[in-house]
Image (cartoon, rainbow, N blue to C red; front, side, top):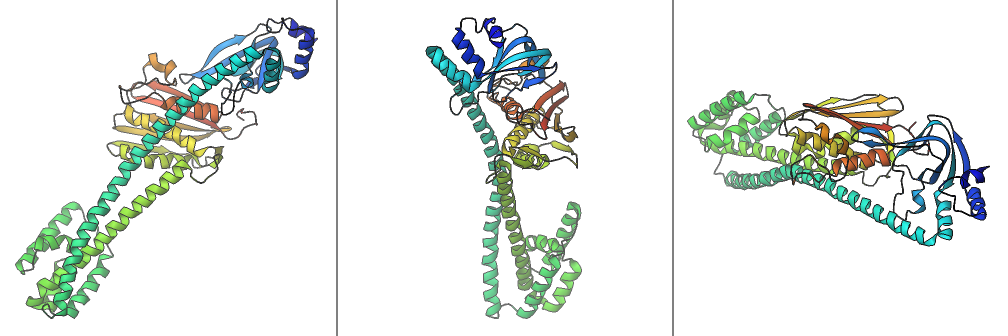
Length: 471
């Protein structure tokens, strides 16, 4: 019966009886009820499906929506099998999702078996198809690599910008500290020779001031400015050298006019200027060391964030926390968020971890958030929402930009298509997003857009049944 069905199709009608028997032995006759998904877009095309009777609908994500590409209803129509021609290093994935529309019967033959038969029966055609598929796959690989370089460029630009600030601060602070240490060395020499007295009182005041500075005063900028002026005028009235330079150190350490009056009584007129300069420069040196510590800590945190972002030294696929990846991405893109972007987080506190490639998903968040920032021209609210949706997690990224024109909706995920100005976009970001979400993680990505609000929705499965189907 199966051989007769195969012979009646246009696909196999030219095969000999011997070839038909060999073909039938290499495959399997399978039946499915209506509504059954045979394969998913992006899943490895390990089989060729030949329709014997029934109906198969082929759909694909286009413009954030599922679009029906074709409906197979004639015996002999086929789908899949691309792995029969895929060479080493290529994907050979299904280009669409196939679902039966009514009870259907198929002839299923593994792609490797199909490849062997074609090589035996039609070697020239097999070579031509091998070359054709290899060329297509090479083009796709080149596009993906170009996309990764663009993502790397975005990461490098953000990292360079974020590292530059603490690095420049540490360099500037080190220069100031060197000058302070020079002044302190001079003062130590003057205390040692007896030029400045009383030395012991100065050292006692120094220890007291450092202890007091450990409790930072909480003053507003206006209050700080007023106190610095009062302290500088007091120092000036008491003939202390460089009063306006010393005042910020005293105020910053919480040393007010009563403390200065008490210090003046203990030091006397002759020793006041040198001792207070000693105390102020000591406080300044301590503050500068704290600034260097803060700057180097910031650099260390950024390096750690990049390491976590890229999942260095971790398995490619593991259980990951979606929120952790999003937060690391926001750190990397921090330089683009400072101009006027407000982040509104609406995280599901009970969101389960998912099995995924964390570094690839971070590319998804990077592209979507970066696009949202550009769409808002650096001003507005960026909302990120997560929720547990059945057997999947849902991530929504919403911006307040001008929206995506309806004329572009069908092409938004196409490679090299961009709505950005010339020179500002390569048109690969959303293509990378679609490939990672749909092809690699068997999820879904859609979008909704009106002027003033564009919402990208990423749905990622919690688990897979082994065939790429979302559970």
